Image 1 (cartoon, protein in one colour):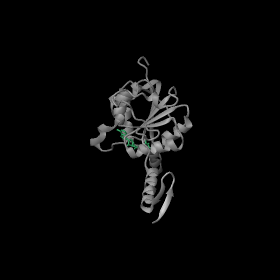
Image 2 (cartoon, rainbow, N blue to C red):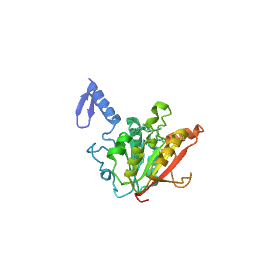
Image 3 (cartoon, rainbow, N blue to C red):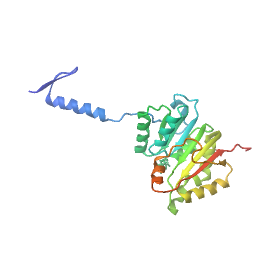
Image 4 (spheres, rainbow, N blue to C red):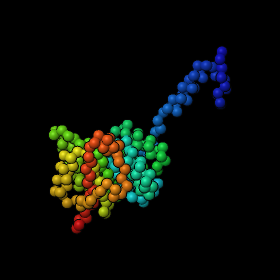
Length: 234
Ligand SMILES: C[S@@+](CC[C@H](N)C(=O)[O-])C[C@H]1O[C@@H](n2cnc3c(N)ncnc32)[C@H](O)[C@@H]1O
């Protein structure tokens, strides 16, 4: 009979050896859980204790809503080690890509939360705590019957964003859809939550997102909006 010596196991026969090999390989292939850099709220019905998730809780907090594969987040995390970044994304596959990017780059200041952005914005994200909120290349919902899903065109969404931002906090929005942008601008003009400020290409470091790059490569043009929180008497 074929035998092999296994560390701590003495002699084993061929079948047992194969099983040990299979288990060893399987363990190496298995995903870690909890995922590194993914956050799991202790309570899904109470405001998030975001500061518990970061090594440096006093640093400014930035949120990327619908962060996709997380290239933007990873680049921002690298560029600004003295800021904390939280991505919110509902698709599991994309969340996996975000935590992998953050993990490989050793970024302790980048975390991902798998959640619907509407729910996070309305109920869970901490109020008056976020220094910048990024809403980049959201789904444009081009069909008329889906237009009501455009979050930038909803007053309640804008009000929630306003409440989340700290004093002078900023909300940055980009889309390639001119129709979405124009509608969002109209709605924005009807409410009194923000001041629109100039945002030129090279005003500050702002990496191109994955979708944006795709659209630029297709020859599309991006529209951007930079909003600063207004104070009640502002
Ligand atoms: C067009 S992609 C843009 C991704 C990324 N911001 C970029 O620019 O590369 C829109 C992303 O938002 C996510 N998303 C759309 N609606 C969402 C929602 N209600 N909650 C969470 N994520 C959402 C999608 O899963 C997708 O990853």
